[in-house]
Amino acid sequence: MYETLNIPPSTIKSIIKKWKEYGTTTNLPREGRPPKPMDQARRALTREETKRPKTTLKELQSSTAEIGVSVHRTTLSRTLHRAGLYGVTIKKPLLKEKNKKTRLVFAKRQVGNPPNIWKRVLWSDETKIELFGHQGKRYV
Image (cartoon, rainbow, N blue to C red; front, side, top):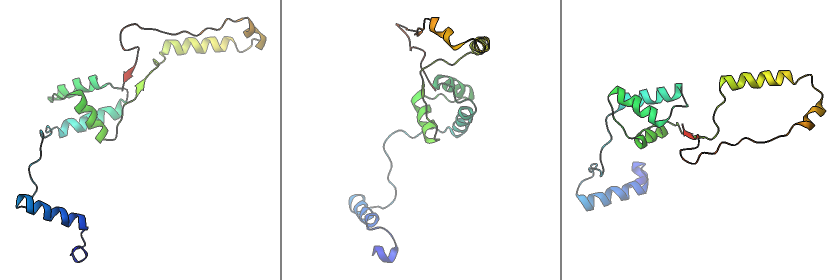
């Protein structure tokens, strides 16, 4: 029968099973709460996230509240995942303009120095340690 209808045999078996169990082949009501009607908010959310990719979920939540749709952060995350947008954890703080300028000035001053000057420099790593808080990580 599946060859004449050009339908996979598993589909025919599931239709027959549904008919035997429920007496109908129409779609049955599904479990769970239906999703909120937020088409406009979904489009605005993906638009904002593609414009500013470093936006946090909390900021996106407040921007959707301005539109008039109150949505949980996990719902926002799921919506972004369905749109193909995924978050990453930023582990290092981004350089500020002031730091970039001072580093550039320092590098330009060191251009003419001989290489053996660096033997007299004591090198150390700076580490920022926070006992409480989220240690500068942002999920964007």
